[in-house]
Length: 398
Image 1 (cartoon, rainbow, N blue to C red):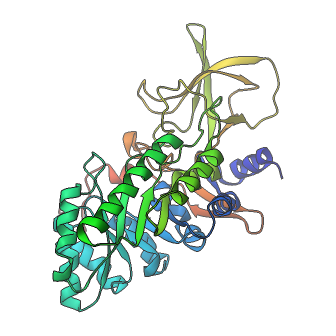
Image 2: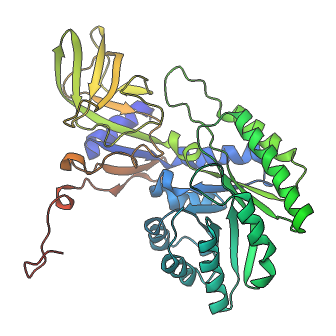
Image 3: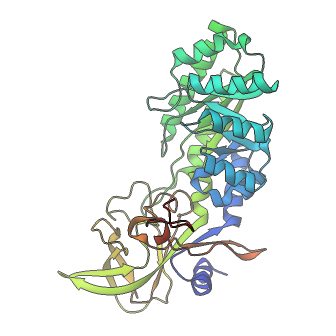
């Protein structure tokens, strides 16, 4: 079955708007990374990119990065092993930290974003007489992590906390980075890790690093994924510090497995511009770097191409001028009822939209694999119930 035939079948079977996640593609993407990086470099899946994939990714990667209690609950419901969890996130309340550590019996790993988080985790270890495995997050100029001075201070007092096991340093500065930027960061980290050993007698055994690999979302963009990955692998091997490096990624693993389907519900011409209105919109589809539809993602019209090619402006269903998915894109055969397939929508795209704006429906989502076929993982859900006052059985406000 071709991609186009697959998308047509999905639209007919489940309707639109719809997210399709090809689990075969997601698995092959991770395996391709493994082939280039080898066994020496670990892989961590940042589940915020696409939490639907967490169970599959837990089988394919070494760790799952968890950045909220909601994500933790997903992992708990899906029986993700505690030792696979890397608990992250800038805000971790003490009661939440203790709940996670209680559930995992201290078998998960946690990053440390502040001295307050460190003390909360250390106190849990003292109270339960169990070790806690921690990674101190090094700040990169944003609200995340701690500066070098704070990290040094914590390491100096490590002997005062017998149940604290500082396993490594965590560093992530942003996403969609070029190879030279990653190489520069690794050179900086190489120096920092050596300083820890020389100045404090502390050998860091592990480095959790988020490279922020770029993804080619738009037509005309060159796919640098594999060249960047080769450069990243080389930069890691050239570090004079020797320890275990784990690469933390979400977008690079999940983007290519996802497709968003949306149907044309109306067509018209305003001031000589061809306009089509689809049943989705920017509340359900988001590409990093897109600015009012200026850039053209990889897109297919699923019907047989007929008639002459025209330039179209594709708008969503929201009552805002900002709901412009693509402008001035040449398409053939577009008409009312046509289904558009937006590719590379497997990461963040479906998670970052304004899901509750105008109380539109939450689209359905499905898995597809050659072996197992289709699996519906979420039915279309109405959101209006979350946008109005609710009352309990006694007529009192909740």
